[in-house]
Image 1 (cartoon, rainbow, N blue to C red):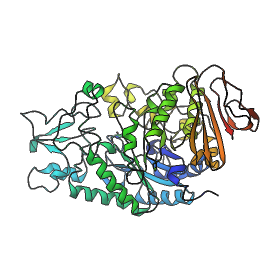
Image 2: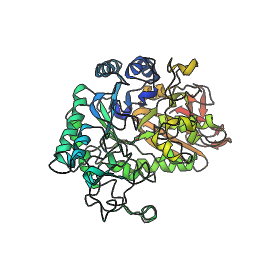
Image 3: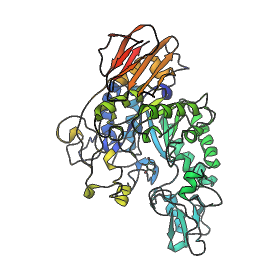
Image 4: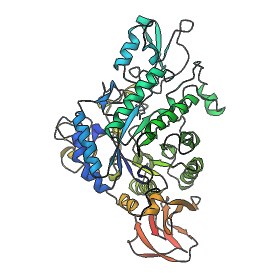
Length: 518
Ligand code: NOJ
């Protein structure tokens, strides 16, 4: 029996990230919708996922495809209605699948009524300070803060003769988290969904919500990179305080989860991601560490990265493992460049689902979906439009889910909003992870540290143990696990299940990934 106190759903389950526009189109308009998700719940349940995280479905002009919210309490008609959402909650919960929403606190849409009011006049306007307004400095922009999506982060508003701040697009004005009335109103919006029964939130760009109060300039790129000077626009003490308040809000309800998107430039600073876990009990429950995503496919480099991430986690905290999301190239494209793409993708799938930490599966990752090449004329991501041909944007990672090999991969009967990609494979790792306690709850013990191209570790829970062996190279490798026993294969890319294996002398196949019952 699993001890329920030890078995916490957000720690030991698998979280599946849905990009709703591309999941399943139930009404033939070429765009995925809530009813579409409901129709695919049985698939998700069979896959064994414990929770789904939905990229935003609130009312939005969709300039950043939902990450620009104009009403936090409504569902955008593209996705359906609030009734559809309530049905999704009921149907998901009846299958033991929790529902996590995206919560965008750094900014709203420029069409949000708060911003319209804030912009309407400079004086005697109670909502003016709900956003970040600054007067020109010597006739110029207030400082040299830049937008994450290119160019200055300041946009001039002629009628009121001030600039407003936007960390992302100019249609995404930043909220002023120093303002307590705004804070209260925003927390009420969050609570609205908690009361309806959602199980938690993924907090968008949460390490950016508070900026330096004195509008200190950011260091120049080289000062930041080489002299480790701190940015004035990220990881400010104020963000940590707001997160503690958020945690208190979540804790008013039972079993809720708060997950932080902690984006750090250049990526790879696990220490900062882990810092948002606080003491393991007072801040976010989970935070994303994107450092693995930016590594080359190399055993030693992966091992160091994983070990470093674990070393940063507070004793009472819990790691998450993420390889793909809607902002990045799909993992198979990143990890599988050149030859042996599929083999490398399998090794990374084993990692994702056997490491210690809550795995996040980006829709389609379970069938090895690849990034699509989007022709210039079809690019709709504003970031891709701006930076093409240097960077073609995020559309390629957001193409419709490939349900089957019928037209448009069974995603829609209409013309899909983005072109459909096509390749299909399946794996059973999620099921194994769910079934075997060491894989979902167990401790992680390194056995081979990647130096010779192989990573091996065990996962241990009470007196059960599973050993994971991964060959990252295209050649055979001899390893010795120094365990004088013959054990059974649980699952393998190259060996038969239930066959036994001698752990003193294993001759691994190229790109072999094997789970052994200890
Ligand atoms: C991070 C989100 O993941 C991304 O899709 C979005 O464009 C930005 N935050 C702005 O909300």
